[in-house]
Length: 503
Ligand code: NAD
Image (cartoon, rainbow, N blue to C red; front, side, top):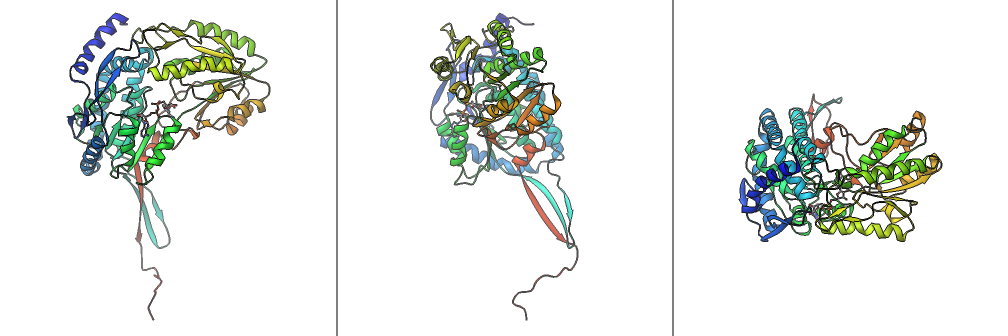
């Protein structure tokens, strides 16, 4: 296994080119400077400058949307097997550069290498999975009626916009871009301003794999500039968005005049409910993993622990001991479990909850403090003696911060679990099968795991209810978003056509 020093040396090699030339937008297969000049990318590890990044505006989005529009017909009409081959080559390209992707992602976002090395490979899996669906993606049904042979088929919707956040940005981008390309759409990608590095690597890999110019275009910039312009552009037929719930609402408004189809994957305040009859050792492992891995910066994190009062004391004591043991450190150190938070703004947001928790009367049972002043590091934090009405139980903190709340009965647990604006995931720990059936039926969430942490299986639907989103990814659900259903009815005989104006 490589050491921290090895990884720093390798990273330095990978970053050299970014330092020299900065990150340009990639439009129609060409590097294009941002019409708004540049902005700067900094590392959350030590606040140092990584490189300049093209500041794209509505002008660049217009250019990219036109490039995506020009490239659309050829990409749509390319034989499915050829498109499939290209997408598989993209997966191979990602695998070949997985280390570069992982190290750059860690430096850009503060995520620990322990998790990011897998995230890069999951990006490749996304491409492979959707490449395998290319051939059937357009198939439809044959629906015979008395007078017609009805057939359906799916057609790619056209050029689409993909707007992604800064948490695991590479993996999330591939999750959207791979099915869009497999469907036959062309793409304009607007990555998060806080994490531009790996979006650049992705478009390079895709073009090297043979993706024709203009099929994938990357425009860097800010949400209110490039992001808004992408939502408003008439040539862009749909927006696949991952980010905050409040931004999701803006995406909908901005797309109203051009009647955009939107897929929104938004925030969460997901409950993990632990009953006294559960396998408590496994439950403890899963509770810890699902809030403290990936810096707690994951939409599916279980940030609310609802624990039965009979086991609460013992469970929380074990939790405190483990949380205090979690290794906070340099994200490129293979042993690190939590790296720095992504930006100063996000660090300020997360740390503000340390005071909010105390003001609301909760106990800071672990953490609740920053680590050093070189970067944006915080100690993994556990709040206890909380109730579900507190801000720490209702608001998405999006950091390594868990709020533990006791419950007495199943009804009380269910009511608290559902008492939130969000509804992305839920995690249930119990060995009572009928309770699990009852509880999961009533739990308001798009995705629920019973006696398990979140394990993603690509054919299953991914998405949330309530303020956590609209639409689903995964399997055929992705194609439903990126494609239009078309129906054609062929008359099978001389059925009677009602005559108007005839004598
Ligand atoms: P964000 O909403 O601030 O930004 C996401 C993206 O939207 C960025 O690229 C940003 O530039 C862009 N954007 C901002 N304003 C815009 C506008 N007016 N028009 C168009 N684009 C705009 O989110 P974030 O802080 O980068 O990411 C964290 C959030 O993402 C959390 O709420 C998290 O739960 C959510 N998330 C959800 C999922 C999911 O699958 N449900 C997955 C990952 C992250």
